[in-house]
Length: 113
Length: 115
Image (cartoon, rainbow over all chains, first blue to last red; front, side, top):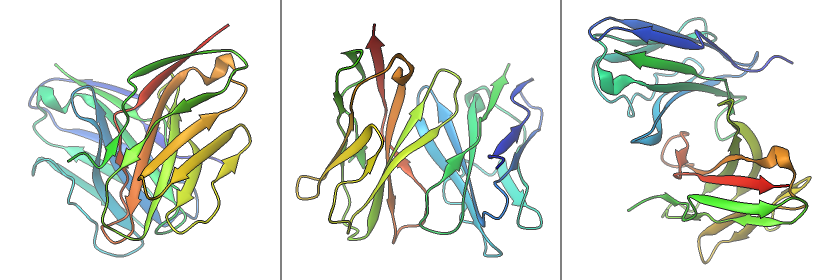
């Protein structure tokens, strides 16, 4: 079956602009996660959605970052007023439920100039 | 303290030989899971193998096995009969079941397989 998909695959933006990154999880997976991978910080958790529960936002680095998940499926990660330190690969993962293996998408490579 | 430590930034292995990638972890949660992922140069994270903290047997998946030593808090990945396609970054990760469902990752090990 289809895996996790993310779009765009690459995004170049100017400092101060807003960006939206999209994630389509594996069909039927109730849990969805966003991570960030950067040279300086490695792989970091950002936010987690499970079904209709309130998301776990404990990993979001600042209030410029937000995410939503519509209809329990597609998720959008929004970064407002981008900064150069936001440059990273943003990875989305999904799992069938809690405490199950997470499967990752190909990532969105964000470059803030 | 680091929750996941991978002490080998880079490793070489000869094709067809076995290689062990080290991972130690730190948690006080009695219920946790340990994962290994492979990240080739293409960037995607590929799930390889999982070990639960209560599993009695070491996990195996094809050429991958996990050497789980609970008392030492280590979860080393063993790759048997290395292939050129095994060249990639390898990440060890932990999920603490009583601290949310997110994964905490180690810094990774870059494995290079020599022909």
